[in-house]
Image (tube, rainbow, N blue to C red; front, side):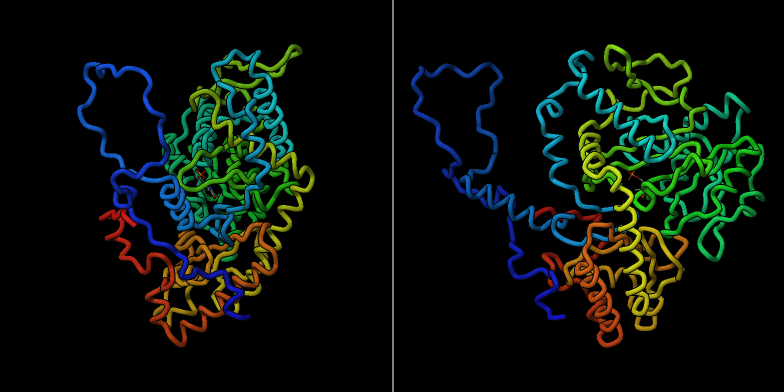
Length: 486
Ligand SMILES: *Cc1c(COP(=O)(O)O)cnc(C)c1O
């Protein structure tokens, strides 16, 4: 493959100063008409001097922000295989729908009679997520995945408290997402780690050993953070239920399972989804998210309030649920995110199953094609992501961080690195369904070249990246000593 096909960065990565450094006295963006009314005295307390704002022309400002936007890398720029984050493309129709004035301008304090469209959308969204997961009692209120976990843990806590009194522990596999033990701890549970077997999944035996009547349940990420399906979850759920516990499933990895797995059949009691992963709403930079929870009918009374109800004369919000864990968010959650994901689900309908199949196919294609160059610790069929390590490169003193930085030179966002923690030097690749075979082949090519570079010129990797706007940083110093100018 010739160099020119790889989407690397080029000499057109522009420098850009702060607007204050760029401005010049007297430069203007627009002209005011001559004053044709008498001047009046400024009101009391008005400042004597004009604020220190840069003086700029329109084209200065347009170029400034356009250049800054080009320093960024997003799903609209290229392949972004950041494992666990499902950085899938957000179809532009989603943005058009969320921008419709009826959605973007509706205010949560309007009376319900004037917000019927928004309430209907939320109610239908709940039904659709119930259909997709098999758990039909749904709340859209949590603002992110971890918030969904916290809400789900609170529901489990409330249910267990009512039915079997206080329990102190929560089982959490070693392959769980890091937010899981944190959410359990925030609800007062002590996290008890469960070791996965040599195939990278949980076994019923291990769970049986640990489950007791002081344990409220288990929190399983499925597929787990190794990208592997927890095949024994059905048996595990039976063990947990037999001792009066409940099963929480972290469904942030739903992109592997849409239209394929019914979580109610698997014995799951509570599940959260990440609309800003699986259902294409954009994320990153701490922007708004949405982490709906879907629960077993027995847990319905505990869902957060307010809840959207459908009545003969329309939709309304109700607080009238005495067992509810209460309110988790101002108003009802991040509505704009819900609209984008609603549009995504309606666009695809039953093709959501195909999305998951393609995501799994793409991950397995990468797994199979990269494993000769980069070590694959669990060499078995994966779901929507796969985990490699730097073991083959260790002998050349090249590590995962070096490889990730070198990928920037080849024009790719690096994968998630050093996670999951159960794998030393992990690189976690999640291509999503969006990448065409040509895109995946270019990523394979980059890895193949990097593996060769490790043998032939390890310094090249140790000092990477070389052709990015900012080259190798002292990351500790960069974090402690922020330098915000271009
Ligand atoms: C992303 C993710 C979370 C947390 O979701 P946030 O929206 O970032 O809070 C939890 N579990 C898994 C498996 C994830 O991938």
